[in-house]
Image (cartoon, rainbow, N blue to C red):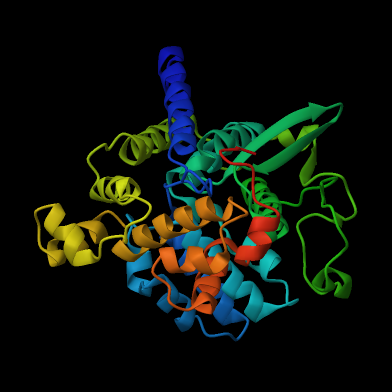
Length: 373
């Protein structure tokens, strides 16, 4: 078991990590630089295949292989993870991609965080651990809960503007958490429910998909609501010794993610951001020479960090595009040309892949700069 001082140190480390995620946001888009574990992209591929759709184009867009996603170090930039989600949604339509993905999110898939949940003394302690360490798995979200009489309300909030993906992400997180609570207890969540704003989607109205708890639509907030007695119940595999080891592993993962100041990908991101706005961004060969290494070595080292040159370049292009679009007197074609796009339609397609919006739609309703939701 961790002592009181160890527990305080753990909480401080988590707070530092969350602050660093905030500090690491791209200046205009708010996208965190800490990526999403590749295993979650692999799971999306498998669910997409289960619905009868090909995942090869999505992997080609990410410029990564299935074997690459299996690597423990693999992390996909949030920008690309969101593009993959949009690709999958477009293919699956109203088939119920969200609940299918949520059902596939088994506790053991989450590594040390899942092990800590399995071995926690109560469901409430597991939820508390998930909230503290969520940044390791979904850096664009925050999680909180509050006791409301004999019920507990659990909420996820986006740290950044998820745009068209907001309801989809909340659907996955709330249903996924309910499924995992069932797995911890080894039984159903009697008296639990999920509230969602908006109208019931087509898959829900058809009533063919088994859910861990009923969903009530047209609500004010996205919430998982559990009876207090469920929140205080013990998981089947509660084990203080295992929970302590899992917590130490989570702390180690934090250190690796947030305290490695010499990561090549961070140096490249900084160098790209430092390039004057009026000049073209360097290509791979030029950047490698600037770092006094061959392009092959640079690509290999980025791959070892779970990153890629294209991801870093696109993130900077997206940041610059958003920065320019905040100025209403700058024509969209000028933004495209400044970023090296000779064809405005190609720029628009790229921008929509990055943000889920066309340049015009983004300009008409931009997120608040630097906001953390």
